[in-house]
Image (cartoon, rainbow, N blue to C red; front, side):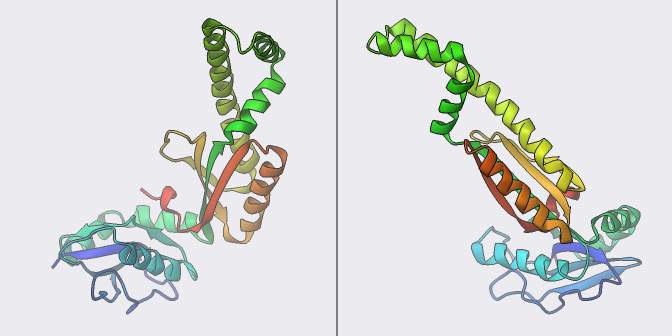
Length: 238
């Protein structure tokens, strides 16, 4: 029977959440499969694994409970193995890697920071920083908005300035936050984000990350920073 895999832990993990409700309707109870120094948190897989809210929350809850007392390598939602024998074979093949990563992640959590611009505030910022742009804008205002060509020229110049600002601000955020973390990974980019950064942080240094993000918000009000965490260290596991 196929099994759903939540995460991987040390076989000596002090409190793996066996019998906790997992995914499925009705919920499948979580159990532990051990091989050597490694253990996997699993449950029977439903016929269909779909990202329903209840199942997403159940997946996260299993990892949250396990992560409170020891390192866990989290799998993203949807990890299914054909059967326990196949899973055990993978644990055996990759035991050394899992042991190394668990050692690295012990006592650490992930924080994610997504950064965007406040559109109105960044326009004020680029105009304030560039006397040439200000002069061009003032000339257009004095001419009742300017000709079509002047408007187009100003719009292109402002767009280029904002694009340069995006690159500079992404670098600024990285530099400001990297000192509070052990590792940093850039996540997938998307339209509208200047940066999508994940940070591996010592659990007892979590406050330093929150304080660093708050300081960025105060010092650079044209930035919109969304901080999520603490999370299982999804971004630091293959």
